Length: 401
Image (cartoon, rainbow, N blue to C red):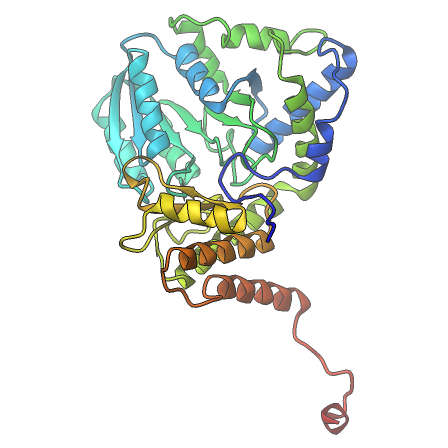
């Protein structure tokens, strides 16, 4: 049997056909007026996705490069920051801040849980030397999506930095309205483009702090980047990933055509379906039952079943690529990504593949137990859209006949 290769991971994610086609565009000169029009549309599209009227700076790097730019451009050695650690990517921020000599106060939150805004606010009130609070929007290692509106209220008196690597484009984001000074993200997850481009939104308060920051920077210097963006022909200061930007432009066209509200609803529904399917397989969820959790869903594997062995069996027998957990949960958790260019039938495929993987490992699973809950939810959507069925005849006897 020949199986197609299918991605069911939180990133990189499947690309829409128009985004794939954009990769075949001939190479262009990025310093021309024609390319500047495309680049400007990209910036405007990212502003819409992030919910900001402020500056959006674009870099050729992984999203972690943009994380590093935030630390370089906002702080001086020895300053104190609060970092929420509720998973592998929160921990990355802890490591990054410490690498740059920041005094890092870590708010430990159990994996699979959101930070409590009241606890965050109390931590900040207890230490007036903390100048910024950092949180991961969607902690991809567990699937937990933080309530950023509540987090923004709790951190209103300090600089607020959000890592939305997988959240932007899939989860609701109102950077300006929620008081989020800096939002960092990249192209390869909910935005449905290849890896290689990252970006940050910067509030006026963040620019004021940037003016005082004393960490060394060059490639990621926000002032240089903003000056280039404000050039008569808008540009990046260094050679950008032109091909990825062309693909991002095609992806943003689809994102904006779908509409952000509809896009958020779709991801929320995909999360609900994924949780129902994994529960149907008898797995214990790590990702909580909350509508926000629509990017990736994580569940614990059964006792005695290693997550890596399960993921390997799934890809070997079906061609579907799932992924394991991170850190200490690496071999205890399996994750299904469902953000970006994904629909319910993609989830049906991923769950059917997971059933096959269990069967290959000799784990008893009732056929269809993961798929059926998703199909039922799909049918409910159809019924809700169609409304109550009506007979073609008003005569009950004729209808029965």
